[in-house]
Length: 324
Image 1 (spheres, helix red, strand yellow):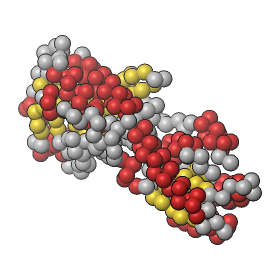
Image 2: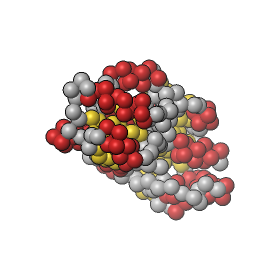
Image 3: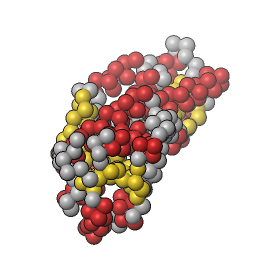
Image 4: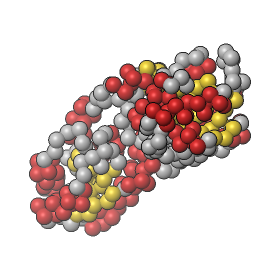
């Protein structure tokens, strides 16, 4: 049971990610099980500024664990990113008797949670972003689903590439983080993988590898490019010019954000949501829930935001060895 139990709020912010609904469900049901009233805040921090809040019960989250996106919707708020906006949000939370807010999102959402905590409303962040780019956590909700979506689409693209002896250059999401590109590139047997964390030379890393692999009898090729590398269409044109192999660019885009969350995303989201409620029930705020060494832990928000993400050099080296 919570001490001095009254109410808790939950919101989703930033880009949507499969598994957010599973996290919302876990927060709502864990809180109600502890005799807390639960408010669902719609459209991120905007909901706290505009009073776009609903009271939730057990049935409010029925049949959402398998749904992509977020039933609470999401948005970014310029007004909230001001001292006046934060104060307005905090005052509204106090008017509802909210003892804590669970914020599901990425780094920007966590900065907003830190500001709200500083204004007197304890917040706990849950990492929800398909990019897997939260430095404090080795896994973020939505990552596994996004990768499986990419893999399914690349497998389909491969059918056409094979039928026409083509090279398909596939751009996946990941502006600053190449985890989706790296892991899906390995999983789909890509000839070359380009990520923003590593400098790339098209001649040595793509052209030479294609020519070398073609000499062994391979006739179709997949190149996976992270969004942060950019120039996907130009890369396809360059490959065709240098190798004579017909090449096509495909940008998968927002299809990677949608779809039913995988088992892993549902389970991790549920565990993280439950942990967040436990923290608030113990009057612990200004924290981020994270996964480290496979365990659910929590860290101070400021500490979490100051951490630098570590790129998986070992997995990258494995990719370079097997992508031939």
